[in-house]
Image (tube, one colour):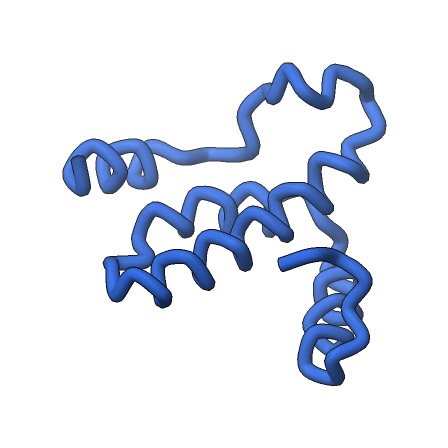
Length: 86
């Protein structure tokens, strides 16, 4: 399984089409992948498992989200005022 994930990550170019977000506005897609990445990291850490599968979400949100948003969200998480449920 890890080899499959590594192979997919190696061939990764940009965020693929996600049928949950069919419109041009990708704000919700950006937000959801940011949350999914941090949820995945948290779940993998709790299990003591390798967090490599989480890199998919990381690459997608890095591709979609403006850097200023990510910086703001990271600061909010550090302060404990982040509005999302992780």
